[in-house]
Length: 361
Ligand code: PMV
Image 1 (cartoon, rainbow, N blue to C red):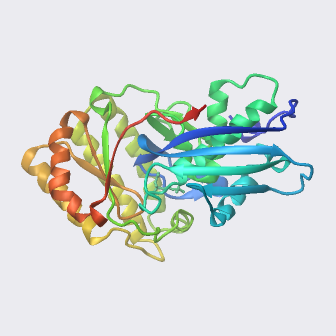
Image 2: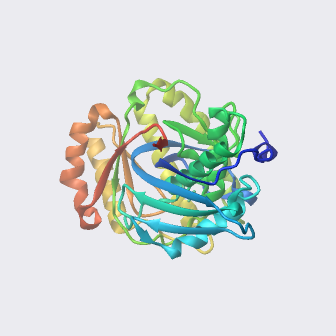
Image 3: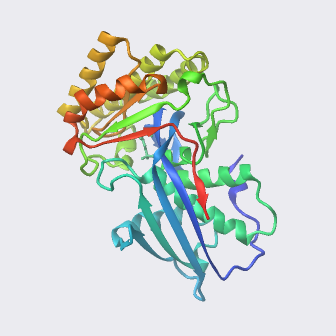
């Protein structure tokens, strides 16, 4: 696939107005994407679990307008007009316009809501941008006479989502998605996410992710600033090579169900992501004291009980606690008794591996 394949033939159908709704989940990376080239091309491959409960539901209403000289849209979050969301969507529209060239022909109303609290410190960009990209593809589907294959529809939606927010391209399907060209996963691409095509052990079915909300504030480092920190970073090339290695190491782990090796790999990835931030210029510490308290408690509990509990982190202070479904009773008990006290207002979200976006009729 090349970029040119996502530029549509001329639209043959006329659609005066319509409405489409998609819900799309968030995802949590196991091997992290950190660092990008021009046009949202990742410096290294990444792989993520698609989540199930943390999602964005977006309705796009569209009506043909006479004057096609500019974008025309309004945005609502939870029913409230959100003009401060407009610049982000305008940037997205500009980036994708050549691939969905109907954008200036319609007036759009974007109505969006998240199933997780807005100020939870959980980025809504992956779920939000993927939901938006899917809505645009549903509009395009009505404008072309030929049937779009499901594969093309998903690939192009992932391609568009990537242009909104890199990790968003991994949210459309499940349950494991790979993004970034690499030698381990056949069919992998820098342009869109693909389903992980190899054997995955039963141990990873319904894998649990309990998200501990340590800091619900605004992100201290936006992802744009964060990715840019990898330019001229002294360890950048080693880190990019390590991500390829870790993806390669993950393949037999996913196949055999070796949970100890899985935990070592994902925790190392999480700490490496933060190490990159601590060793860039300027440098940042995004973990909070309670992030470290939680990590130490997880390690102690694991040593004492042998439970297969591990963690990963995003570019922030919140902790994703990952564990197999089979051990969830004991581990959730531990989380409630020992870890929740370190969360802001004792807030946490129970999620698990999911299977991607759905169109809502
Ligand atoms: O999609 P972005 O540009 O917000 O970057 C996300 C980066 C991490 O969440 C830190 C890692 C990842 O692969 O999701």
